[in-house]
Image (cartoon, rainbow, N blue to C red; front, side):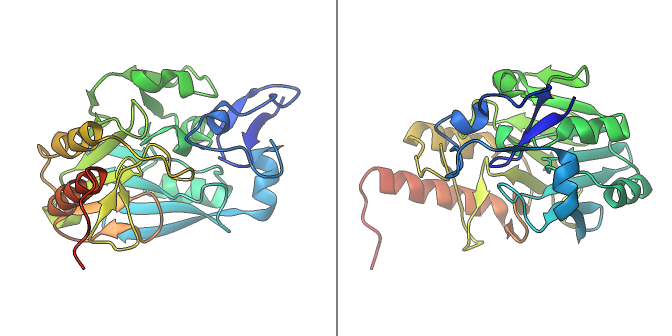
Length: 272
């Protein structure tokens, strides 16, 4: 039986002879059902028109996307460490070339995602590399394809030695970030997906309940997100798409972005 993949969000569903009636992730107000209605495909069908693309973002950090872009269009990140490799976020495809190259790079020991929109075909990736899938317990209801590889965690987990994944909430209750102290040549990197999203002006970030539907977060939640990451030392921030990177002084970018967001919620007018 095929494991159906939602065409709009790219998240894989449980094996079934017939596709589900609807995608729970897209039916949620943070996402949307495609304008042509609910459509399903399979990873095999996706592979006929798409392939994985791997790019080095910096030493020991490899971006993994899809070409042409698919569904939400995010790219994953493979963090390589002496204690094992972590796949941060996921795509809707794993092809033979990507499997071979990731194996050459040391494989995948654990898969962690920023939030449910980026779950992709995480079970396919985990099966390919005999990896654990670490999901915040707060987001257990959003796990679409169950697997014995899924392990639930609460507020913080270390998928491999020296790497921390922390739940900071906001976009989803379990929305998380990954702290990689060895990143950015030892200055530290924060991988955020769009738990904290890097915007077009890469000196800034933003925070939303729903990005496609433009539903904001409240003041207390935005302040909570900004405060929770202050304990981490880092310089660079990697968002969820190619090129969305705060290249330096990431903590300052997050703090001033949170302050600006809160000021606008309070009705402050931007300076002319």
